[in-house]
Amino acid sequence: MVMQADPSLFAHVASTPEQVLIIEVLLLAFHDLSSEHEDIRSEAVSFWSSRNGEWARHRRLLLSLIGLDDDAVMPRVRALIPDHLIPVAPEPKQALDVVRRFTPTEIRVNAVRAILPDHDFDLAWLCERLPIGRGQCRHAVRQLIEEGVVSSLGRPARDKRTQYCRTEDLLPLRSAASR
Image (tube, rainbow, N blue to C red; front, side, top):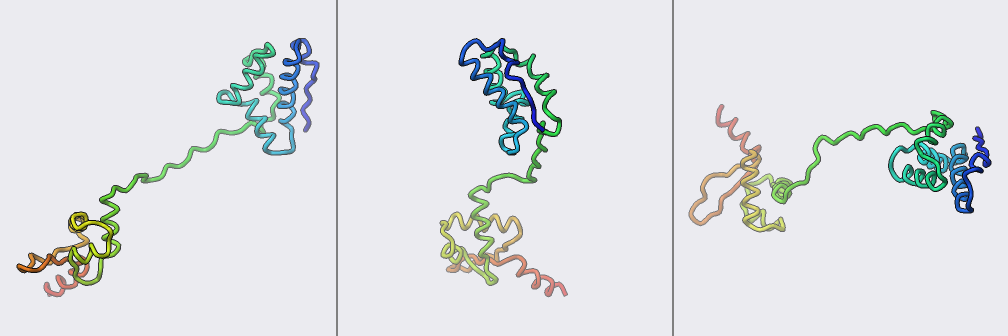
């Protein structure tokens, strides 16, 4: 399909070399609608079919420089563009279910959760393995206790530290004691 546009169509408009050049640019954009190259054709369609944005602004500027009104010219130009070339509106992007950032506390809690051992442990054991302070370790363990992931093994003896274990490690003991 070759689109034809007569250069003499704008002959009465062109009075300066600049206007002749603008007319040539507009005619080239019109001929690009039938280009074999997808990129060239899509840019030409965008140029002629955009109602707002950069392409529309440039088209309006060029048409105004040769004394034509965009609103008067565009219905005739759009009628010449085949329907299959006019871009359809893109499908809306699907939103993700949850988009958020983790807080520093959540990052520390997840780090502690990732290294929980199968045996009893205390805060010193965690602090040796993580690059966070004792207070932050304690806070992370408290969060895990609230979530039910970790349990405290009771009050420590006078010289000993509080021991913790995974809650799932206690469940077999509870079920055995209830029998």
